[in-house]
Length: 195
Image (cartoon, rainbow, N blue to C red; front, side):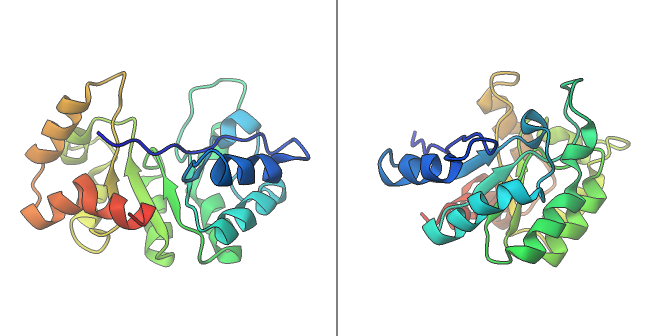
């Protein structure tokens, strides 16, 4: 297996951009990971903008937590997709993966992805079988993910909550064409990461 690391920096620190540059240029990390609820800020918070600008300059993607969080001290609104939409208006070339895929705002995330061609959706921290489970809230993601957004849905595991093999099996069991399944299981990630 091949692993690529993403940097995690504290946007509250004045040297956050320097930390990111060092992580990429010296340590060889390949992206930035932002858990907005941990920093008590939305994805469109201006304090994150210098980091986004550095990502564009360094040509690295950013993964942004999207959807409800279960950390009670942090309001769940920090995970709303509309903040990613507002940020991508200002950074239209920034490659972003929204993961987990937006629950309970899945339809809103789909709309944001339809507006911004650099936004990918990561199937992280969910059971893939939920996409084909009525009433789960993920049904539209399956519909759009196998059609209009087929090039921008990426597999991610729920490890250690769910074994990776089981997550892959659940993707394989979804009603997808072989072409779309191959995109979800690796080709889209390769494009996102510029491999």
